[in-house]
Image 1 (cartoon, each protein chain N blue to C red):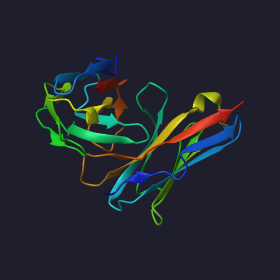
Image 2 (cartoon, rainbow over the protein chains, first blue to last red):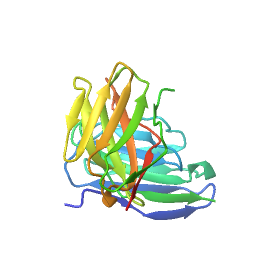
Image 3 (cartoon, rainbow over the protein chains, first blue to last red):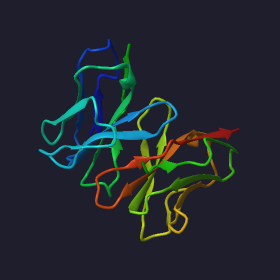
Image 4 (cartoon, chains in turn orange, red):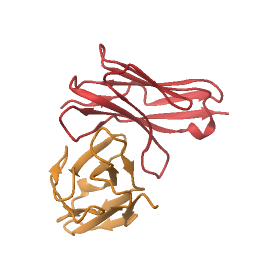
Length: 113
Length: 112
């Protein structure tokens, strides 16, 4: 049981490049989340998926798109990366909804130059 | 927008002492609160949660207190150990949403 896994662990992009961050969970959780964490700030919700087939915007969705590929996988795409998107990205999942513990992945450290 | 904040960015405590980390929240509609621990280079790890119909909840060496009157949340760690050194985040979740709002975090340093 690996929990929540994320790939890649590190990535450097040039401004304007695109990439997809992958997230998968093996706990049969219904809800999945993408956060970003900037220095000196708490985690901010980018997008979430309450259940397979649904996605909704969080606090900072601009510049990102998501896909809930199936119950296990939730990907985050940057279509045209900007330096302001330099951050650490965390994926999380919870068994049902917000009133249950969220399990976090190890994070992806993204630098956009 | 509404957010969750912390009073102290860094807290240093002697090993064996009790630690208290405080958090203020501003959304009166929040009915679920969580404390997370984050070690360097890792994702946040759940410590303890509390629902708004409670004012105190205890776990192993940790206690969370909720004061809805003043919108204040605290995490108490008993007999603080070196392994407790980390950044601690509180988070609130407003009723009727799927969202969590995280505070900026408090770094706990345990002195030997």
